[in-house]
Length: 461
Image (cartoon, rainbow, N blue to C red; front, side, top):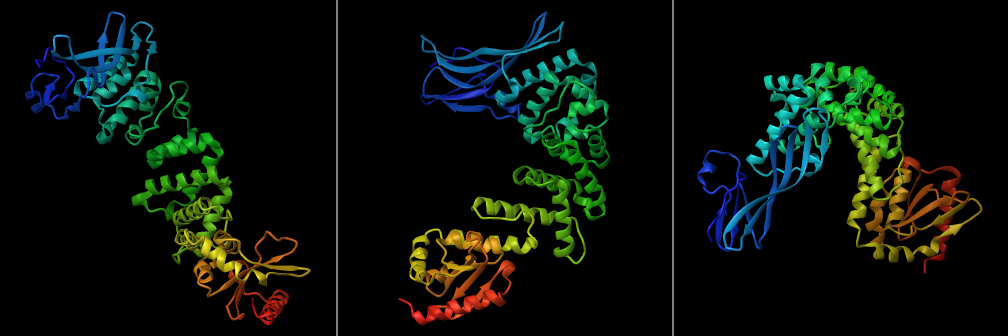
């Protein structure tokens, strides 16, 4: 089939064994670096890609959005059609914008010609709405292109800045912190306001703006903003004061990344597990001071990661947890072992229940205490989680009839773990452990010994 026309938008279409190029010749590929869109059309008309076209009239600056369509006409000739159905219009007199589509949501990279049209539109809008921003970027726009590999996101954010928030853009530039844009323009959810003073534009308290600039923490802008907006400025102030108090313990070579990572975890724990920031920070410091891996005190980055991991494991597997376990590392490791047991024994639940049913006859109750068997493997895990020991790892021993595991409860609190007991198949008491794996003594231990002797006399069934 003969090609009827060409288009400024570059693509190649494979159709019925032939390749048709929208721009006619392939020599243009040698002078432009971007690879053209290549598609295979199984029907006509066929929408190839989204395209953008800039138009300037006497009254308006217009960015049209449409589709480049591959078609075969009634004369059996191939044609490339540009069909525009939406637009963004900026009035040259009032400078008001009428948006027929949301560029940030609907833009997808098509080809060089669309990009040229978008950039031309933005330059014209910038010059019309705010000559100061235009001249600043004309002198130096390198800080907006630092993340060239994320060009699509950068362009979406830049479009939003110029078309919707150009005055806010100016206020940040005049504050003398181009690094603010360099570190944030590539982020998917980056946005600033347009009205009011600088703190309202960037949606941060003044002290936070000053702290970010002084300490070169522009990477932390979005998480600081989240803490300030979802909680309040006071919570953010407490966190920044904490960083200042702890600055000698933070490695300077990686300071910005450490502070950002720690802040993200603080935000997560406050939001998901309802921590008060003062309680959380105090707890982390005490854990590091009393139980840290190093002999010297250090910034509690490992502790917050461990706490988050511990809580998330418990939440994922439906295990009970303490918000501030006394020995965080030990409790984290116990839960990790219990989780491994759950994963390892996923298909062994029936075997576990069968093994337990064989010694359920040994359950016992007197005036103060009860001895019961675990209902399932998860029951075993919950017991170990609550009492801070690794009884969950005994699941296979129960299945293989190497151990009999029992729970001792106080009758007044039958649902609350109290003591865990292991008895061997020959009715020998192996061990009895309470909270934090402590040994059992006194009245409780005497009760357990009497119960084991009585069970042994029955001789099993």
